[in-house]
Image 1 (cartoon, helix red, strand yellow):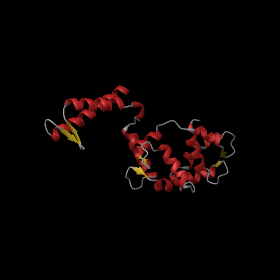
Image 2: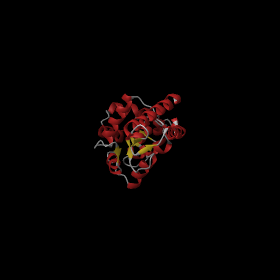
Image 3: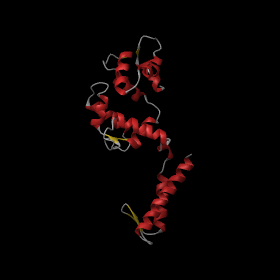
Image 4: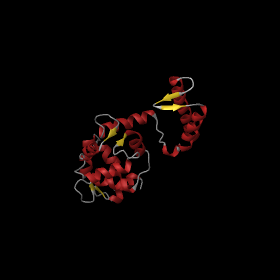
Length: 199
């Protein structure tokens, strides 16, 4: 798989450079302001990009899954469909659960903002976050949001209230969340809840 990704990247980079050469003239190519003096410079550029490419940084998903993720991203936070979620858009989403502080919003964005531009980009931030292993910090974050009365438990009523706001059926909420209610008391402790995150 890594070889295929590396090969794809090399072919795409070569195609872009070749396009720049054909647009800019026979001896010198330009693309997006980049000027290539000769084949030696082109070769150096390709080698440098290939060396800096780390396949582990790439998240591979199918086109249907990517479209599904984009739909979720737009429905939850990116209502203007510009491909990013600003701090205000994240805050608005969190308000679905409960009132949150600016620090909570900033910490959430900082944890996922891979390019440090202060917003959550659909690609790579959101796509990578959905395809990475869950962390204890992330589980605590979501537990805090779902525990709307801050009593250190998530009750079935809290879950159903949030599920309704998010368009999730009561049956799906019960199946997904309450399946980890080991002592059948109708509420989830953090130790029970974190099992949903495979922790």
